[in-house]
Length: 190
Image (cartoon, rainbow, N blue to C red; front, side):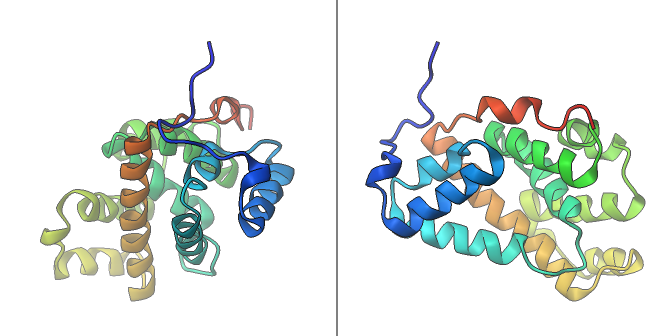
């Protein structure tokens, strides 16, 4: 049974603006498939460009957060936001970044019982507070993160990643975006 990847029109790659088409083809070459988020968000080219520019600014820079840390934030908060696509897709990336076949499932289901460090738990506690109760973030939250070696810039990154993927989670749910089948099996044998 074939399911649509979005409830909104998905343009053909050949019909997309050149810059978007080139980005999608580069992702396809690297991953071996095109993640549905690229195809779905191409429905609105200007928003596609803005979305991925901010994504790249958050996810591809040097930071006190590891690539695995960033993916943990996405997986844990996406689960709370009920975003199947992001839990599955970023869970696959987390398994790769952490070189751990179990970590994504643990973090998605209950990060408090996952095999993660106290530093990572503090990071996820803060991310969850930003996700669910950002109006309650206060100095005590920063002090807790400082004791685990996070800088103010790291704290900004945790908050920004959480907030950005909150937007992503909501748009994925609005569009009815389906995870690619490829993500489910990725890196399960690490």
